[in-house]
Structure formats: C-alpha cells, structure tokens
Amino acid sequence: MSKIGDFIQGADWKREKHAPVIEVPETIKAGEPFTVSVSVGKEIPHPNTLDHHIAWIDLFFQPKGNKFVYHVARIEFKAHGELETYTIPAASVTMRVAQSGTLRALSLCNIHGLWESSVEIEIA
Image (cartoon, rainbow, N blue to C red; front, side, top):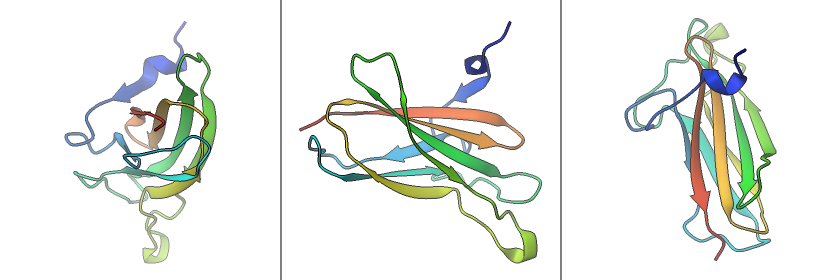
C-alpha cells in the first residue's frame, strides 16, 4: 500500500516552478521571534489561473534529533483569476523556536501534486 510520502516531489526551486522556497534570516536566536518567508515560483513563475494554481503551502518545524514535525502554519490561496483577482503564492510567518532544526514546506499544485523543500536552521 502506498503512503502519502510516496507522492511528494522535491526539486531545486531554481529549476522547478513547483518547489516551495523557504527564506530565513542568517542569524536566529533561541526564543526570539524571526520571520520565515515561503513562496512558490520565485525563480520560475508558477501560473495562477483557475486551471493551474498553487492551492496552499504548509510550513513545519522539526527540532534537531526529534522524529516528529510540528505544523507551524497553513497558507491558503483562494483567488485564481475570478473577476481578475489573483493571489500570489507567497507569505511570511513570524515564529520562534528553542533549538536548531529543519523547516519543511509542502505545497500543492492542483495539477502537479505535492512538492516539498526544507532548510536547516541553526540557533546562534
């Protein structure tokens, strides 16, 4: 039997318009707020039409040495051209963590499925 992870794709976001991009500050201090930006289509624009669009991006944090991930945020993009209104698949989340770990983003393209990327963060 297949698992959902079998359907998640990953790629370098500089070469693939579906892979989420995670941007974090160079320095992150334990317990202090910092802003994470997540987007799809940074280098190669992703279409945003009724027929082809990014529906949402989820952001997760996995502390170093921990097997579990913690759901930080879900950003939903609802406007895909209705009455010439468009949502750009990009958002910022302010968060804080107590230790180093991995930020993971998962995005859904209504045609091309689930895409994942990750970035390591180190606490200064």
